[in-house]
Figure 1 (tube, rainbow, N blue to C red):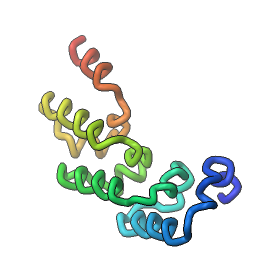
Figure 2: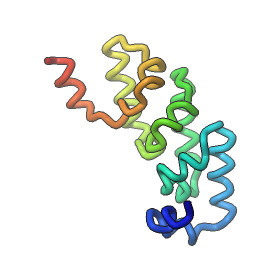
Figure 3: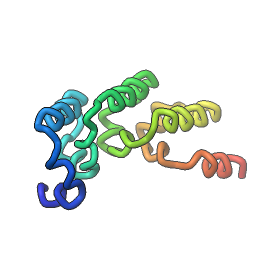
Figure 4: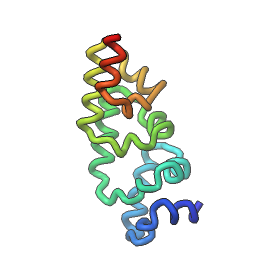
Amino acid sequence: NVSRLMDAQPVVFSLSLQNLRGCVEFLKDLGVDVPKIINDRPDILRYTNLKNLRSTVAYLQGLGVNVPKVVNRLPSVFGYSLANLQGTVAFLQGLGVDVPKVVGRAPGVFGFRLQSMAATVAY
């Protein structure tokens, strides 16, 4: 929906066609639902440097996570820093959790605050 995109991220219309194509092609190659991702997270089109997106994908793939499934369910995963993802994964691994399984079922775990999760576990 172009009007929603214009309302949410008007700066997208100032980006070069090359940058937009690069981001859309990256998402297509990843195998995600591109219209859904852009609709849910239009700011992803502003990522002119795909290096960060690729780093996130490589990290998650290295863990054995089904990346397209996670991105389709939680497009904001691309907005989290690698340090944030690593901290959450380390916390889950410390609990003996099957990280790919948990992240696949509930990718929103990356948005939880580590302090809150630790307090819940301690309780």
